[in-house]
Amino acid sequence: MTWTRRLHTRQTTFRQLEIFMTVAQYTSVTLAAKALHLAQPTVSTQIAKLAQALDCQLFELVSKKLYLTDTGQEVLDATRAMFDVMDNLEMRLAARSGLSVGRLKISVVTTAKYLIPSLLGEFCQAYPNIEPEFQIGNRAEIIQRLKQNLDDLYVFSNPPRELDITTDFLTKNPLVVIAKQGHPLKDKKSILWEELYGERLLMRENGSGTRYAIEAFFKENRIKMQNPITIASNEAIKESVMAGLGIAIISQHALNHMAPGNLIELPVHGFPIPNSWYWVLPKGKHVSNAAMAFREHVTQGLSHKKPNEHA
Image 1 (cartoon, rainbow, N blue to C red):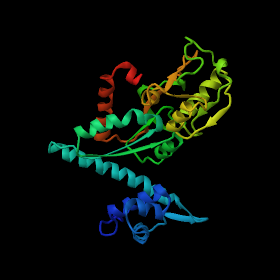
Image 2: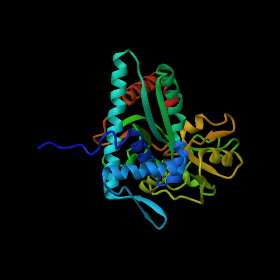
Image 3: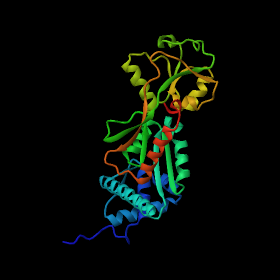
Image 4: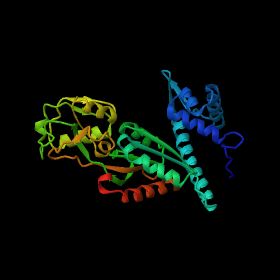
């Protein structure tokens, strides 16, 4: 029996599917239209035409909020897989002509912004026809992108192992205790954590990978967390520590990128907290040629750095 394709090219276009993916990502026609630089009625019309071509309901509006239907989720999964295949095909065909073109979508946790951008810049200079898309967010935000399979590569310091994922070691990301230059204990060779009980501890927000690692370390070692104050970015933490508001525990990479001479690392016993960054992918995800090339570039780039530059 012959199967007749319902996704006929005269009925359904790649542009409609791209618009559909964007609406699903933002769960908002208005936000999707803004991201795509289209008029809102245009987006609504294309979604309606796609639903008509597929003879199904893609979204439902509940309490003024847009949700994918079960069928819509199936269409979304298939659409993402199809675009991954087409991106890879484009790169393979271009490679036959001695070119390297395509997209590279990377999402990283906030601390990795001190590592990945410079390596991505070098990679884009070597492959100028690769179009990068780079997202930075806290751990919770990047987990959401991972669940939606929005990117080619993800970088976590504490991978969400409760999900069905694969992980590969990237590099070490130790967490150190920092204080304002001139701290009373700066000249001690070793400081007990108990000596810092009178200090305010400045910490990232809930959902941050750094906070997740700190809380796990404190719990495992039965360390008391005193006077914690939540601050939403490493830059704000840096300014607060410099102003004498308290001490903080941050990525050593972040400290290396902060104003020299204004902050110091305190030699606290039991620190730094062992931590690492990992490449993370949904299990079974096809890895594009661009993603594989970038991973190799990062590996080579880190191997050429001095140990204290990425340890």
